[in-house]
Amino acid sequence: MYEPYYWCHAPILRGWVAYFRLSEVQVTLGLLDQGLRRKLRAILWKQWKAWRTRLRELVRLGLDRERAAASACNGRGTWWNAGASHMNQPVPNALLQRWGLVSLQQEQRRLACNL
Image (cartoon, rainbow, N blue to C red; front, side, top):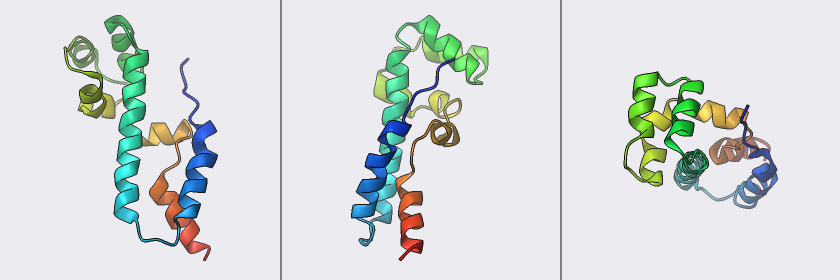
C-alpha cells in the first residue's frame, strides 16, 4: 500500500559520501545515519496525521494492536515518537533500506575497499 520513495535521494547521499571518502568520519557518518533514519520516521509519523491512521499503519507494519493504540493516542510530539520503540520496531533499519535509504557508513566502507 504505502511505500515511500527514498531512492531518489540515493545519488545525492552516495555523492556526498564519495566526496568525503578519504576522511576518517566513521563516527560522524554513524550519527548522520541515525539522524536520517529518525527524521524519516518523523516524516512517516507526520504523514499519518490522525490517530486512526497511525493505529492502522502501526498494526499493518507489525506492532501489536494494544501497543499501537497506546502509541497512536499519546500526546507526545513527532520527534519523540520518531525515536520511540513503537516506531523503531515496525519501521526497522532493514525496512528503510528496502525502501531505498542508503546507509552512509556502508557506502563509505564500500568506497574504501575500492581504493
